Image 1: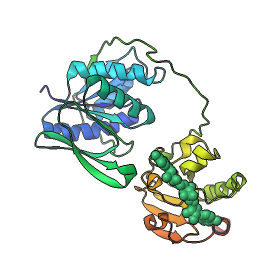
Image 2 (image 1 turned 180 degrees about the vertical axis):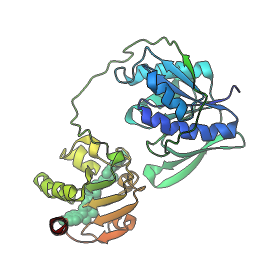
Image 3 (image 1 turned 90 degrees about the horizontal axis):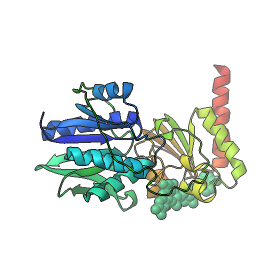
Image 4 (image 1 turned 45 degrees about the horizontal axis):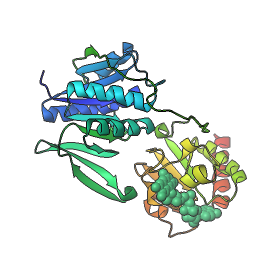
Length: 320
Ligand SMILES: Cc1cc2nc3c(=O)[nH]c(=O)nc-3n(C[C@H](O)[C@H](O)[C@H](O)COP(=O)(O)OP(=O)(O)OC[C@H]3O[C@@H](n4cnc5c(N)ncnc54)[C@H](O)[C@@H]3O)c2cc1C
């Protein structure tokens, strides 16, 4: 096996499998092998990694991605990377993954490109495409050296099974537990995986009162959707838990149907939903940017439109 390598890491196994798809594509171009780093118990996860294309799986049993903090995880991942010296390191851009990638790149003194939409090799240099200026522009950027530390948004690539060699290596690392002091604050969480939802209703500041959420929730239920929101709704007004906000600083969704209700469509929001298949915009202002993203524009008052749709759906279900 060649010395060249592309490594994948995420604290969530299903995202590691997605990254392995990209790792395989890149290693085919590089003439390298594809590997994955697993923290904690290897077990069945090792077999799965091989099924999704890992030639080598590095198991670090003394660190646990569910219990240890990002600094401890990053330190362990950095040590594995140092011992392997891969060309490319792919890390899933979860909240924790973003932190880990920055830490890893800093401790290895190498470059880090975050939230990359694509990665390729040009003249044996690693090239990425990523959003710039809050998502308004796409930039093509080239790494000057190795390893290139790259984060990839969850679900950007599909996990495709592809038999890897599946060689397992248990790696010993020396990490000081609790490197930094972590202060925890209780954050209300919905626990909903918006990223996996097939239908999403996103509510924005077009809603006048918190109480009116009942109207949107009824609409959401009628559609069989998950409820998301803009940042002001969760961050400023605290009407919904933080993990429901969609956009640059929140979740990235790509449902089959996305219904924006009283959402203006600022770029920081659009970045999180622009991969949706069909978009409906309900907004009284016909010039709101969200209408430009929409396949179906409804330039009317949400307080009239939502009950009308709910009644229609109830009528259809009643007849069925
Ligand atoms: C660094 C940074 C990161 C950010 N990250 C995010 C992010 O991840 N996600 C995010 O969402 N935002 C983010 N923002 C905020 C973003 O810039 C916008 O301020 C925000 O998306 C606007 O939210 P909104 O559409 O709910 O509110 P508004 O912009 O106030 O829009 C409300 C809309 O409701 C419409 N409306 C009013 N009444 C009705 C009615 N009765 N019926 C129908 N429509 C009605 C109005 O016409 C208007 O278009 C970020 C900002 C910064 C600076």
